[in-house]
Amino acid sequence: MILLQNTAWLPEAASTVAPEVDRLFHFWALVSALLLIGVVGAMTFFVVRYRRRHRDEVPAPVKEKKSIELAWIVVPTILVMIVFVWGFRVFIKMYTAPPDAYEILVHGYQWYWEFEYPNGVKTTGELHVPAGQPVKLRMTSADVIHSFYVPAFRVKQDVLPDRYSALWFEATKPGEYTVFCTEYCGTQHAGMLAKVIVHPREEFEQWLESAGIPEDMPLAELGARLYREKACFSCHSIDGSRLVGPSFKGLYGSTRTFEDGTTAVADENYLRESILQPGAKIVQGYPNVMPASYASLSEREVAALIEFIKQQQ
Ligand code: CUA
Image (cartoon, rainbow, N blue to C red):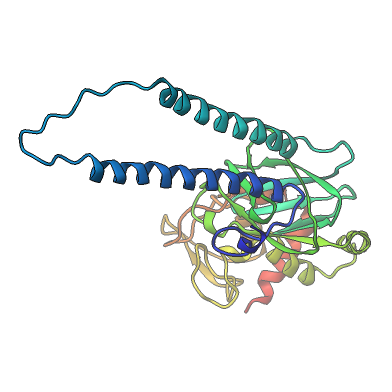
């Protein structure tokens, strides 16, 4: 069954629970296939064997046979009980995190994932974890329902506003795996992807130490980093191409025309307002869909983004 991995049949199995899920799945797929062959085979055989041969032929009355009736009650009952007990055990294991699990906070936003580590480091779009250690995700959403899904780990869990949900896994080998959002959450739902980057253990410690944003990072550099990490790029291009929102190219200093026909020059105050209160002024021809979640950016982060936008001439 290992041979079937990394195909359209099944993605790579890269967590401790994945092989268990796959075994159960393969068992059920095999039983279903055998039942299908048995039922369709018997049906075909009976259709041919007992077909009507003459127009006036009347079949003999059917007599029940206790042993056959018993068999089709007992056999399926045993099969579903096997799958119930087996599935329940795997389910309990999947949803009970070991007490020593390394805990990471996950925030779902329209339309990106943000991860916060115990030492305060935050990443967007990339979840860094150590291999060979249980990791528990405590997850919540800032806006609508999202769902966190890593096919290679065989784990999936809804992420809801106003409450925490949890998920845990132990990655077995270093590498990169894809996170999907599997709950329709708006325009960019399909693009709400992230990467899980599994590091060897020692390397993870090193990464964690180096990942913090230095206090003295120049504003424009920090802005470029935020543009990437806060997923601004999914709606605002820097090459002038039109996405969901206006491009940043040539934005600073240009005259903007709004829905209500008024105009304003895009100066620092305009940019600041548009980041923190996206609905305040809507540029003509664009939908009012920017999430309000950027209001949680710090003063320095807002300044950094403005600096970055100013550079896109
Ligand atoms: Cu978030 Cu779909």
